[in-house]
Length: 209
Image (cartoon, rainbow, N blue to C red; front, side, top):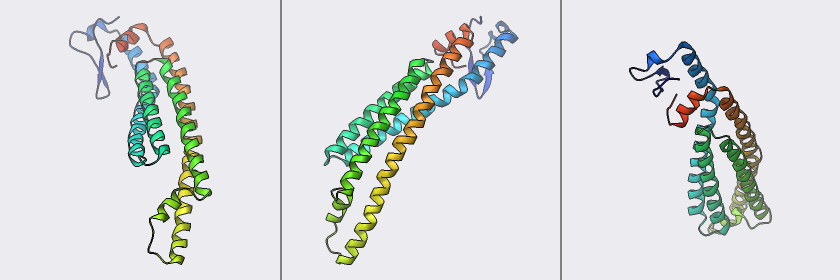
C-alpha cells in the first residue's frame, strides 16, 4: 500500500515527490480504475448539490413572494427543508455513503409530492375562480369591459399552463431523479466492494484521487 497521499490535478494522476517509487504499476491501474468508476458518483453528487441550492433559492423567492399567502409561506419552508436534505445527501454521496443515495431518492419523492399537491391546489383555486387570475384582474381597473375579458382569458390560460407544467415536473422530473438517485446506491456499494481498501482509506481521509 502506498504510504503517502495521492491527488489528481488537471485530470492527470500525480503524487508528491518521494511517493512515485512506492507505487507499482498494479497500484496505478487500480487508481485509474477507481477514478473511472467514480465518474457516475461524482456526477450524481454535483447534480444533487446544484439541485439542493436551486431548491433553497426557490424557497427564498417563494417565501418572500408569498408573505401575504399562507400557501406561499408553507411552500417556502418546505423547499428550504428539502433543499437542506438534498445538500446533506450530496455530502454523504461524496463520502461514499450508500445511505446518501437513498436519502436523495426519498427526498425527490417528498419534493415531487409537495410540488404536486401545491400545483393541484392552485389549479383547483384557479378553475373555481379564486386563483391567480382573479388576483391579477383585481389590479386592473381602467380597462374597457371587452379588453378586461380578453386579458382575463389570456391570464387564465397562462396560469393553467404554469400549474400543469409544475404538476408534470413534480411527476416526471422528481420521479426520474428519484429513480436516478436510488440506482446510485448500487454504484456506491459496487465501488466499495470492488475498489482496493487502500484507495478507500485514502478517500475517507480526504484525499482526492
